[in-house]
Length: 123
Image (cartoon, rainbow, N blue to C red):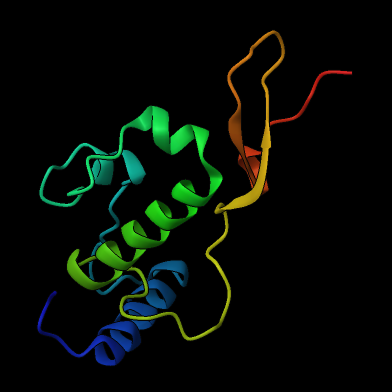
C-alpha cells in the first residue's frame, strides 16, 4: 500500500480535473485503463490462482475478485482518480449482480453483470 495521505490526493485530483474541464489544466491528468484481468493474470495479486473461467462462472467469486481488485487499485496505483476507501457506501458501478445466466446456445453459465455490461437473453 502506498504511504500517502489519500484525502490530500483526492483534493488535488479534484482540482486537477476541475481545471482540466474548465479549459485551463494545471497538468495532464493521469488515468490508468485497467480491468480485473490485470489482477487475475498477475501472480503476486492472485495468490488463489483464480482463472478467468472460474471468475466468469461464479458470481460470488467474481464479486470478491472485483472488490479485491478495486481495493488494490485504490490503495496502490497512483492516478488522478479517487484513492483510498470510497466516501460513499455501495459497490462501484459495473460490479456483478448475484445472478447467473446462460448465453444463447451455451450450456456454460456465466455471471450476469450490472450496468453497461449486462448480458441479456435473446427473445
